[in-house]
Image (tube, rainbow, N blue to C red; front, side):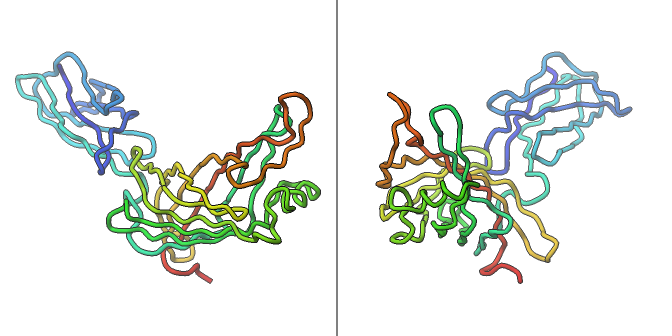
Length: 271
């Protein structure tokens, strides 16, 4: 066997799509191998004794390069190779982070007439993220203005604000408060929390992906996240439905929520 290695993130998750390339001292590629689903890299054969360069690449991660010396065994045993997320630290620095509505979106998709989808978004929202030293103890609190629903159709939006759906006169805010995080993969977590909407509070989990951290043009530090969840309208006492024909309703009972969030480090957004 010419090569043996294990590719991991800093928190120990396998990088399944990593590629390991080995070049000799002239820069000529002598070996290339892909990591398997466990991040393991194995390549058969043997290499002549000498010095080689081992380069590991993966989409979304900074490349890693090292020098390996092959002896008479003909084997490069690279051990565990750790890749860092490209462009920044592995996780956002601990402390307070403020959601930036101008560079974020809160959207939902519902099925319409059983054949297509209606897309909507909320244009007014805010919140705060508290990143803990122990990432599993981090928290998020968010508030959405229910009346800010926008589907691109004024008549439909008026109906969604009515007592048939959001009933914004009685329940002007939608709130989400997390209670914990569970790791779900490299840079992925399940956020456990409670969603309050239309006067009903239910546990709702978010599938969260961390997209990275970096400086912004205004002197701040930003972190980006993408999250999804599925909600059932009847869980929140929104039972209105117009049946078009047998088995087909005007609006589906399930909503897919998609969040694209930028948060700025600190207790307040820059002016």
